[in-house]
Length: 190
Ligand SMILES: Nc1ncnc2c1ncn2[C@@H]1O[C@H](COP(=O)(O)OP(=O)(O)OP(=O)(O)O)[C@@H](O)[C@H]1O
Ligand SMILES: [Mg+2]
Image (cartoon, rainbow, N blue to C red):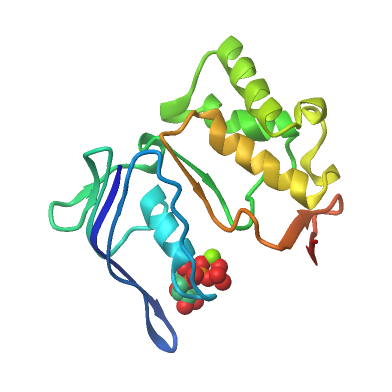
């Protein structure tokens, strides 16, 4: 399903070069539940971002379901919205000025995954039911708990019915919560 070959990525910072990914070779089969474990700063988020297409690797290849999505050698780079992937970000990346419904609806309104108004409503509500947030659809996101905001991010990733779901620290104990004054509260759970 996901095939990575020789994927590498360097970041250039003031202090020098950070080799975030060094020649990653990986095969993840269809229906496989694959977990990446590693210490802070070891490149887990960078790898997910490269698979999703929101970060460009410096070289190597990445294919999804047999289709090449990135190839440094052949100059192939399929844009993120055409990869049929859903991603839950480490920071959730929910929009504080939008309701729960509108956050989940966003990827269905524009671009490659857009659908008509009736289908949009059905898709959003079925994703919200999956994460048990259907009763909070109209609530602004800052008026939710950190865990509920994380489930909004999960529903948004599922709403496009992706072939692959990428989750960056979905069970992370540090919880970030966007609070009504626009700030971000970070606390430990459990
Ligand atoms: N945009 C960037 N610019 C420069 N360096 C970066 C950038 N993003 C990540 N890095 C560096 O790349 C390395 C890998 O970072 P990454 O975020 O992938 O780690 P991680 O394994 O997800 O860590 P954590 O468990 O803390 O989330 C780190 O050394 C980090 O400082
Ligand atoms: Mg990370």
